[in-house]
Amino acid sequence: MIPRYSRSEMTDIWTPENKFRIWFEIEAHAADALADLGVIPADAAKVIWAKGAPAMERVDVARIDEIEAEVKHDVIAFLTWLSEQVGPEARFIHQGMTSSDILDTCFNVQLVQAADILLADLETLLASIKRRAFEHKDSICIGRSHGIHAEPTTFGLKLAQAFAEFERNLERMKAAREEIATCAISGAIGTFANVDPRVEEHVAAKLGLAAEPVSTQVIPRDRHAMFFATLGVIASSIERLAVEVRHLQRSEVLEAEEYFSAGQKGSSAMPHKRNPILTENLTGLARMVRAYAIPAMENVALWHERDISHSSVERNIGPDATVTLDFALMRLNSVVDKLLVYPERMQENLDKLGGLVHSQRVLLALTQAGVAREDAYRLVQRNAMPVWRGEGQFLDLLKADEEVSAKLDDAALEALFDIGYHTKHVDTIFERVFGNAGNEA
Image 1: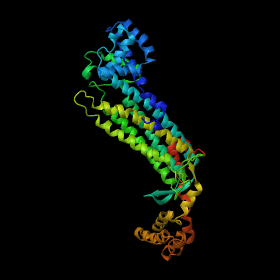
Image 2: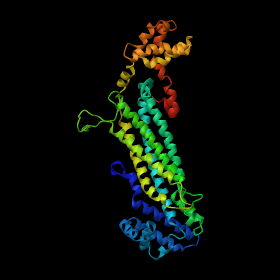
Image 3: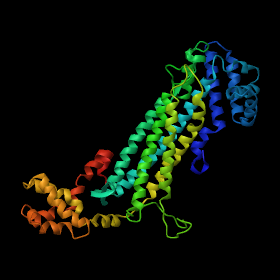
Image 4: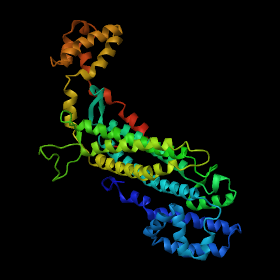
């Protein structure tokens, strides 16, 4: 986790203090269930809470690390320190349980906590995209395919597409949260030989999780693979919108650009520069988040019932992927919220090709006037290419072409250059994306 790309709300989830608090809660809730089943004394469970809970408010991470340096086992180090706080009743802690019961359940709790922040981030981003989409619903701009001018669209439609994509990501994140929210308290090899399944059910309920149907001492890592793959998909969507902004900010385009604050400097050498540094940064961050999905998938295949080849991976990707994606979502939200949009420049760019953006309408009109499609294509293209080279206006050349004018008179040709033709279904698309709100003024 790099502080430069971190927010405290997310990094707090991955602190040793939070991890140890979750470990304690797992152990203490398990003790309650064991007491209810008569496996340990009820008074012992009460003491574990009474002495352990206050101790967790001042958990001594340095002392636990000191113990781990000797015993070379993180869970044993924690249990040893906890025993020092609880006293004789600590012998009833961790009854019938194994380390993975604590580690895996805790990791899933942390991922659920992270997912809740990411879901809130997505909601915030969606609200910003929606507001800007309606603001520029009718801001006409050129659409591009292969980076080349194609046909007109609106900037609002560009943002409506982004909204729909991130709305899908919201649903994906909800599904990933549900899938990862499982608990395993099944003991060695996952057979419940030394811990009753009812203990798992109790702990799961207390932590807001579901009991893992079959754990083989570890929670199956296909769940985690799906979780981190979902983060990777969301990162790809971030990059898609970031790349769009980067393109639109190019000097030759300049239809939109990142907000440039007073006193901000774009280059150490060239004082005139206003660079798309935030969206470039988002492209880089997206690459990192996607990279974490591969090791998560490789973690699925463990030896037999359990090994720990996944452990070192997850100690890295758990914090790094969630922290990085959280930061990226909030940075993208800021970019969208403050994005500078230039409709006048959009119109200038739209006009640069001398009307060529209407070529398909002319093609279709000729076919409807009785011209074979191949012949119509030839007629339109031969008038389009001079315009492409800067030799005249498309409409003028079409009017002067005897083969074209024989099928379409001047009035008919002029009607084909109505820009409103291309935006007549904007309301329909907005309604599909935003529902009844799609026709908001």
